[in-house]
Image (tube, rainbow, N blue to C red):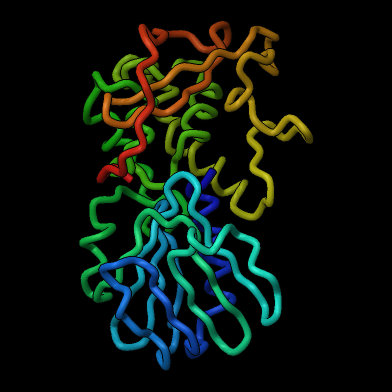
Length: 278
């Protein structure tokens, strides 16, 4: 599942394959930009901003993409079979003499002026893996709405950028509270730990092929995806319920023994609409 570390890795792969190279193929397979042609332009760099990807090319243009739940960019050498999905799922192809980058199932793909990038990512809070990281600002953003459930505040990319559903569940477990606990009810010492712990987890995983928050081989996550298996710490069955504001629900995992605080009252249907909080 794409989170800040996954997108950071994708940016690094794309940068290594495309940066400094002239595009010999350019296909944007979305109606709005189907006639756009980037061939002949040099790729300047590829960078991540939270869970967004920015591919900057010569001439002041940026290709902005977002992976959401199951999007992916794959890089292929000449002659290698494309295995990222069926052809109808391809949304973008950027090719050079040596590599071809193929974007599959991209829910967001737009070409914009580089000077207008803030229109796409300016709403984001400090990036956990970016040069703009500011733990004090991230903490101030998180506590600005003390009544908001902690899980929702962590997922809101306007607070801090890079946390997805996996890290939301794992962070709440490590803090010993449920994702439904109001931010203002979090003990002061744990509140101060939040940005530091979040950055530590993402930085530890940005180089790893398999994400781990436990340090245990074969048992990579404490609670995410484990329901109804036993909690790795106490053995209590892990629980799962949807959490969100009604327009976008996400499965949320927690241990009812290790994590103190309120539990969900209901489990409404999940939604997948992309919101500005991404």
